[in-house]
Image 1: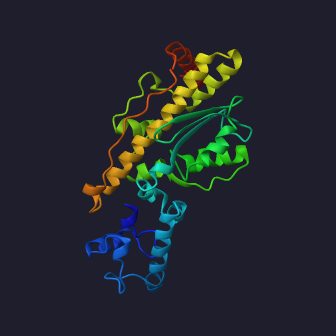
Image 2: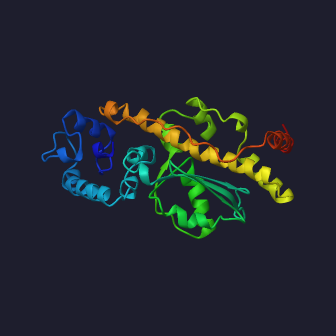
Image 3: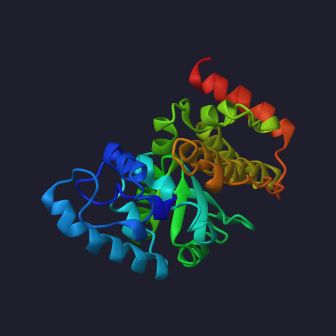
Length: 281
């Protein structure tokens, strides 16, 4: 889809982009001057330069060139071409305040699940994340990425596909779990477990050093992460179906990988009761 994209050029919006497609300007190589639709003079001047830069960015595996020019809700357009260098990412923390710490991180690259645990191997994440050029998250722009950058004192210059914005434009709502339900995804015994529950799990793990508790937390963190791939494919396919290229560009959604950690039902039941009491339910 990215090669059919023109709305990353200043002065070209979605309506103009559709007019270009209708006039036969369906990819970057078909751009011509004079342009067959009305665009600002500055756009006519800059478009050829930006399209040439776009080709260079593709050759150099530089997706940030495009996401820096696209609206957050349009970042899905880079997905298929940069999928092999994409990391799906989610973090768990001790809270939201400035003193909060990262407890676990789950990273999935479409083939392998990686986990990082505070006090065990958390620092290894910093090296691993730079193996990728795109980060897919849900609300990562507002939470996960700034939290990671502040916590590790690093800067992540990756292109970002924040599904919160992409899915919202498609009419999805209810947070990550709500979006999953809208496409028929089922979390099994992790249904009803949320971020606050993850905080309780970490506290319980620190108190008792019970490996079952940590495994339950990691199972939840991984579920948040691997589900992002299916949602990203779903969002991509729904968007391309609204273009003239949908039949050729639709992606097949791969099966989710097996979760390497097992959530303990007894621990979930116990902490659900604790969570309900703390929240006054």
